[in-house]
Structure formats: C-alpha cells, structure tokens
Length: 444
Ligand SMILES: Cc1ncc(COP(=O)(O)O)c(C=O)c1O
Image 1 (cartoon, rainbow, N blue to C red):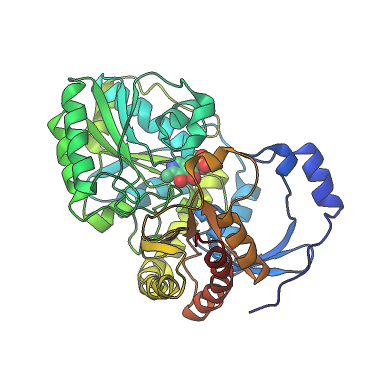
Image 2: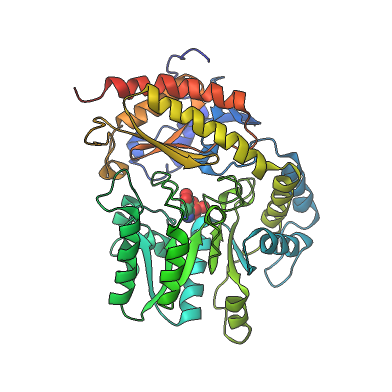
C-alpha cells in the first residue's frame, strides 16, 4: 500500500483542459481533471507520477484492462486498411461481430444494430420496440441510468433525468428491487409493475431494466425477479429490454447480467465492455421475430458511424479476447474472492451498511446510522455542489493508490476482468483506509 501523497498543483495540460473542455455532469467551477499519462494491466499512472489500481475500470467499462494487445492491434490494422466506409458497405469485422453477438447473447437474439455509445444503443431499442409493437409507452425504473440523450435520459430514473424534464412523453417509472433502501419488498415492487401495465391498458411497448442495476447502486434482484418480469411484460404484450451496457461482457461472471437469471430478453443493449472501452461502440441486438418484422417494414433508424469499421474491429477482437483468455470464468472465480473481501470490509467498518453484487460487479453502500439505514449521500447530491462523505472515502482510497468510483451512497467496485487476487487485496487495503473516514463521520 503506497503512502498518501500531498496534493499537487494542476499542470499546464490540466489547466488548458479545464479552460477549454466541459467536465461532464458537473458544476464547471468544481471540475478538476487529472492528466493520465500511462495505463497498463489493471493500473494507470497520472502526470504527477502516482499509480492507481483501477478498481472501477474507469467508468465500469475497461473490462479488458489497459493492455489488451489483440484489440489495440486490430484497431491499428483496421485504421490503416479501411478506416471508414458508409453503413451501406460492410467489412469483415462488422459481419464477424454481428455473428459473435448472436453466439454469445442468450437464446434467439440474433440481429444487431451498431451505434457508438450506450445511450444510442438504448435510443435504438426504444425506437425498435415502438416500431415493432406499434405502441408508444415505456416502463423503466427509478433507480436506473440509461444514457444522456433525450430518449435515454427520459427513461432514466436517477436525478440526472431532472434537468431534461419533462422529457419524452410516455416514459413511466416503476419502483425498484432495492431491499436495503426501499420501503417496498423487491417482489412486491415487481407485482406493482404488473398492476401498472394493467392500468395503462394495452399502450406499453416495453419494460426496460438493467438486469443488475449498475451506477444506481449495484442492485441484484432475487433470482425469481427477472423471469417473472419477462412473464409480466409478455402477459401485457410488451417487450422486455435488458440494458446490459454496464452489466455485460463478463462483469457478473457470466457473459451478460440476464444470464445470471437464465432470462432471454427481446432486445438487449450493450456498449462499454463490448470493446473493453478501446473504441466507442454500442449495440442493440434483437430476437429473430423482431428482426423479421423489419424485412417488410421500414427500419427507420441509422447513424453515419453505424458499424464504424474501427469500432467493430475492436469489438470483434474484444470478444475473441474474452473467449481465448477465459476472462468470463476468471471473473467468476476472482469475483467470488472479491465478494468475500468486500464482505470483510462490511464486518470491520460500522459505516458499511451493506455489501452486495455478483462476480466483479460489487457495491458497498454506506450509512451514518446502521439501525435506521441513514445514507451519507442523498439522491439530490448527484446534482448539487460540493463533496459528500462518500466522495471523501473515494478520495482517501485514491490517496492510498486505488481509484474507486462512487454514486450517491455506494462505492462501485468493477475492476478490469483480468485482476488477480493479490491486486484485489491491494485495493481492499486502500478501501479499508477510505472507510475509516466514513466510520469517523457516523452519527453518535
Ligand atoms: C446501464 C447503462 N445504460 C446506458 C448507459 C449510457 O452509456 P453511454 O455513457 O455510453 O452513453 C450507461 C452508462 O453508464 C449505463 O450504465
């Protein structure tokens, strides 16, 4: 474990960047970018010479770590051979990745629309569901994030939605399976969705969920939740869309979050781990029944960069890397170990309210009062100024050599899949130091 470093002044790059580039989701006066100069394996190095274990895979997307040579080579080769062709042409990698996704996604999911981000993957899913069913409404949940563009932010439940309201009409929010912090039992919340769909009449095109909720706190539903949700959606002639942008590509120790529950959605959205973050790429994969519908109906959607050759080359090489390096199995094994180590943190630190998760997708939820489960970070903090105790926990972990993202009241642990047990140990030591800060800040 490295010793805490004293704070350093911003360098010239950081100052220039701060002046000319917007920081995302932030009051610009609080933006303080740090220059990264090197990245390798599960670590990255900043310009001041500090090295960090990447315990959140940057934005829960660097699933392959920072040394996936096969992907880097595929990108370099493609950019030299055929850097770009319009979407009405194809390339070897585009056909290959389409086929690979049909193989690794569950059941009959077989045809893909490629875009450049998670939010675009969700936008495509929403339009496809509406065009296919002829219905307009979409039910999603409050503790969710589906992207920043207008449709995706309208179906997002978390506070990032509020600035975009009133948003797209026909986007309805349901309660979540959140046993620790909600007044509703997870299975009761599910039956409420059944009632919502009944009350909406036959007007709902789709129910959209993250099978395991990501940035809103790593919420794992009971085993029977997702199968029953599919049943409810289909009973009301609505589609089930699983947003696997964060939970996909080995994060859970399975290819996809829905595989944990043996559920095949009608539409699946992917991004992030699809290329291990080596290129921006989104994917929306549908069943053959939905694909067939568009044989004689207009697929009224597209982008200049739909199936960008360099991005799909990265995707095809990434899928090969997951397969050939057995990263899904590895994530499952090290994920069990990570689960044990985070549970130990829970036993040691009274400010840890709950640890939860699957595979290498873990959340550590904090509390200032374990009896009453009072959070340190409130939902409103996501869009307000200043730092929370949870931010201070992350900052202290960083001082001890580990980067860990947090959202509202939960530390989000989602390291690159190749992480080893000893690297997990190193990062857990840093979190141990960070959690002393929240222990000290508890209510008396
Ligand atoms: C579940 C989920 N869906 C969609 C998105 C949006 O992806 P992007 O930021 O690539 O647009 C995210 C981003 O974090 C996500 O976690």
